[in-house]
Length: 307
Image 1 (cartoon, rainbow, N blue to C red):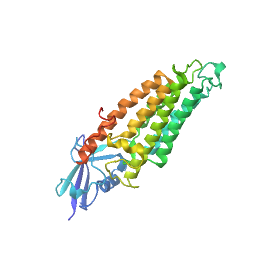
Image 2: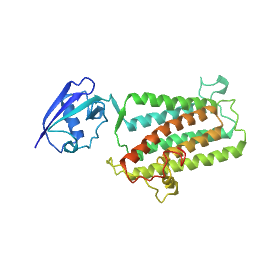
Image 3: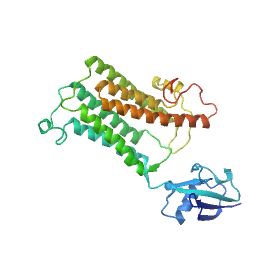
Image 4: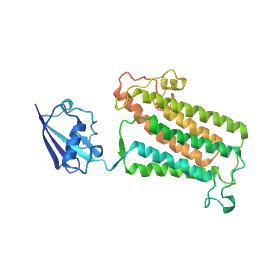
């Protein structure tokens, strides 16, 4: 038995499309493709199909006959705007800070006074900070290409401008002061720098370990969600207490970089990043609790027993 599908504009309630003889086992993704044929300007990844005009978007894998609809299914469409792939967004976000920081490190002309063009700092912590910053963003670029598996292939194009402003702007601000000819090393000297380096590297390894563990939860091409658990890797044991330990390690790495450079812009970047990661971690934690009834009750979103 076939079904009929009508698609209305979520804002105006005008009928945009009527699909006759739709298979009951058709997915939302397939319905999007049918809708795209009659409205080529709205390609599938740009579409949000909902049961209610103000409701949440249905998943592409949702099946028509499993949804609470009658023989004529009414859906509401909302335009998500122009889309761009997550990989492209991440590569752009992370390449910018890498290049910008190196420009300040090598003191290219027109950044500092002309007499400092292409000079190098006399403080070894400045060179160490450049290596750590470069390592962090090269790691992110490689993870984007070879590790991460995204549940959604695209994101709104407008986000790339917002995200690049954040990453590129902070990178330039931090790099300007760390590589400035008048920069002074941390107050406690080598002991502080070495402690900070250990914290930074420890958390970078931990962050990478979590990304590998999360990748292994999702087979290639799948959108399956599972509860992440600790593996044999000791860096993943933090899963016993935290839902999003990748953010926990990320915070630790930037705390280490702040301690290493003793630079106020770095501290501010770390604070802003912590606030944003807390928002993301809380959202993911709520999602886990809602989706999995047996979700471990001792876990906190980002900081064990605290937050």
